[in-house]
Length: 136
Image 1 (cartoon, rainbow, N blue to C red):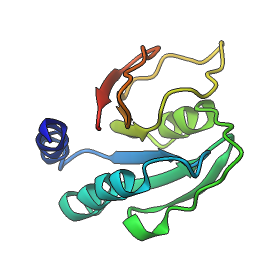
Image 2 (cartoon, rainbow, N blue to C red):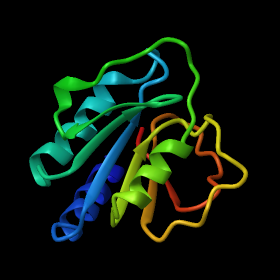
Image 3 (tube, helix red, strand yellow):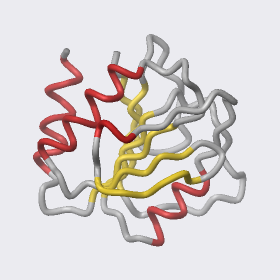
Protein backbone atom coordinates (compact mmCIF):
# COMPACT_ATOMS: atom_id res chain seq x y z
CA UNK A 1 0.00 0.00 0.00
CA UNK A 2 2.96 2.30 -0.55
CA UNK A 3 1.05 3.96 -3.39
CA UNK A 4 -1.84 4.73 -1.01
CA UNK A 5 0.34 6.95 1.21
CA UNK A 6 1.88 8.57 -1.86
CA UNK A 7 -1.51 9.44 -3.38
CA UNK A 8 -2.78 10.66 0.00
CA UNK A 9 0.14 13.06 0.39
CA UNK A 10 -0.23 14.22 -3.23
CA UNK A 11 -3.88 15.10 -2.60
CA UNK A 12 -3.06 16.84 0.70
CA UNK A 13 -0.31 18.91 -0.99
CA UNK A 14 -2.87 20.18 -3.51
CA UNK A 15 -5.60 21.36 -1.12
CA UNK A 16 -5.48 24.89 -2.55
CA UNK A 17 -5.39 23.71 -6.18
CA UNK A 18 -8.12 22.94 -8.70
CA UNK A 19 -7.97 19.13 -8.96
CA UNK A 20 -9.80 16.71 -11.24
CA UNK A 21 -9.92 12.93 -11.13
CA UNK A 22 -10.75 11.18 -14.40
CA UNK A 23 -11.79 7.53 -14.51
CA UNK A 24 -11.54 5.44 -17.67
CA UNK A 25 -14.93 3.70 -17.73
CA UNK A 26 -14.38 1.79 -20.98
CA UNK A 27 -14.22 -1.67 -19.44
CA UNK A 28 -16.27 -3.37 -16.79
CA UNK A 29 -13.24 -5.66 -16.28
CA UNK A 30 -11.56 -2.84 -14.36
CA UNK A 31 -10.63 -3.49 -10.71
CA UNK A 32 -13.72 -1.68 -9.47
CA UNK A 33 -13.06 -2.08 -5.73
CA UNK A 34 -9.59 -0.57 -6.08
CA UNK A 35 -10.86 2.27 -8.27
CA UNK A 36 -13.77 3.01 -5.92
CA UNK A 37 -11.31 3.13 -3.01
CA UNK A 38 -9.17 5.68 -4.87
CA UNK A 39 -12.24 7.78 -5.68
CA UNK A 40 -13.34 7.52 -2.03
CA UNK A 41 -9.90 8.75 -0.94
CA UNK A 42 -10.33 11.88 -3.09
CA UNK A 43 -13.91 12.27 -1.86
CA UNK A 44 -12.74 12.17 1.78
CA UNK A 45 -9.51 14.20 1.57
CA UNK A 46 -10.44 16.74 -1.12
CA UNK A 47 -14.23 16.80 -1.61
CA UNK A 48 -14.07 19.68 -4.10
CA UNK A 49 -12.30 17.39 -6.61
CA UNK A 50 -14.10 17.21 -9.95
CA UNK A 51 -14.86 13.66 -11.12
CA UNK A 52 -14.77 13.03 -14.87
CA UNK A 53 -16.05 9.70 -16.17
CA UNK A 54 -14.95 9.02 -19.73
CA UNK A 55 -14.24 6.37 -22.31
CA UNK A 56 -14.19 7.42 -25.97
CA UNK A 57 -16.20 10.47 -24.86
CA UNK A 58 -16.84 12.30 -21.63
CA UNK A 59 -19.79 10.57 -19.95
CA UNK A 60 -20.18 12.83 -16.93
CA UNK A 61 -18.56 15.65 -14.97
CA UNK A 62 -19.64 15.95 -11.34
CA UNK A 63 -18.43 16.41 -7.78
CA UNK A 64 -16.37 13.40 -6.69
CA UNK A 65 -18.51 10.50 -5.36
CA UNK A 66 -17.32 6.91 -5.24
CA UNK A 67 -20.76 5.40 -5.73
CA UNK A 68 -21.45 7.10 -9.07
CA UNK A 69 -19.06 5.25 -11.41
CA UNK A 70 -20.84 3.66 -14.38
CA UNK A 71 -18.87 1.06 -16.34
CA UNK A 72 -19.11 0.16 -20.03
CA UNK A 73 -17.98 -3.03 -21.74
CA UNK A 74 -16.83 -1.86 -25.18
CA UNK A 75 -13.17 -1.35 -24.23
CA UNK A 76 -12.67 1.80 -26.33
CA UNK A 77 -11.11 4.84 -24.72
CA UNK A 78 -9.62 8.13 -25.85
CA UNK A 79 -7.91 10.57 -23.53
CA UNK A 80 -7.98 13.62 -25.82
CA UNK A 81 -11.35 15.09 -24.76
CA UNK A 82 -10.56 14.84 -21.04
CA UNK A 83 -7.10 16.35 -21.50
CA UNK A 84 -8.54 19.24 -23.54
CA UNK A 85 -11.37 19.71 -21.01
CA UNK A 86 -8.81 19.99 -18.17
CA UNK A 87 -6.91 22.65 -20.08
CA UNK A 88 -10.09 24.60 -20.87
CA UNK A 89 -11.25 24.40 -17.23
CA UNK A 90 -7.81 25.53 -15.99
CA UNK A 91 -7.31 22.43 -13.87
CA UNK A 92 -4.08 22.61 -11.85
CA UNK A 93 -3.67 18.84 -11.42
CA UNK A 94 -5.34 15.99 -13.31
CA UNK A 95 -5.25 12.44 -11.96
CA UNK A 96 -6.39 9.82 -14.49
CA UNK A 97 -7.22 6.25 -13.45
CA UNK A 98 -6.63 4.11 -16.53
CA UNK A 99 -4.61 1.24 -17.95
CA UNK A 100 -3.20 3.72 -20.54
CA UNK A 101 -4.31 1.61 -23.52
CA UNK A 102 -6.54 4.31 -25.00
CA UNK A 103 -6.08 6.70 -27.91
CA UNK A 104 -4.04 9.91 -27.84
CA UNK A 105 -4.50 12.45 -30.61
CA UNK A 106 -1.21 13.03 -32.43
CA UNK A 107 -1.82 16.78 -32.63
CA UNK A 108 -2.51 17.13 -28.92
CA UNK A 109 -1.23 20.40 -27.51
CA UNK A 110 1.17 20.71 -24.62
CA UNK A 111 -0.63 21.08 -21.33
CA UNK A 112 0.37 23.37 -18.50
CA UNK A 113 -1.19 21.35 -15.69
CA UNK A 114 0.26 18.51 -13.62
CA UNK A 115 -0.67 15.09 -14.95
CA UNK A 116 -0.62 11.82 -13.00
CA UNK A 117 -1.67 8.51 -14.56
CA UNK A 118 -2.91 6.16 -11.83
CA UNK A 119 -2.47 2.72 -13.36
CA UNK A 120 -4.22 -0.25 -11.73
CA UNK A 121 -2.44 -3.47 -12.61
CA UNK A 122 0.98 -5.02 -12.55
CA UNK A 123 2.26 -3.50 -15.80
CA UNK A 124 3.28 0.18 -15.76
CA UNK A 125 3.31 1.46 -19.37
CA UNK A 126 5.19 4.46 -20.66
CA UNK A 127 3.07 7.58 -20.77
CA UNK A 128 3.46 10.35 -23.38
CA UNK A 129 3.68 13.04 -20.67
CA UNK A 130 3.13 13.43 -16.97
CA UNK A 131 3.99 10.74 -14.44
CA UNK A 132 2.66 7.18 -14.22
CA UNK A 133 2.02 5.68 -10.77
CA UNK A 134 1.19 2.01 -10.27
CA UNK A 135 -1.76 1.60 -7.90
CA UNK A 136 -2.06 -2.16 -7.51
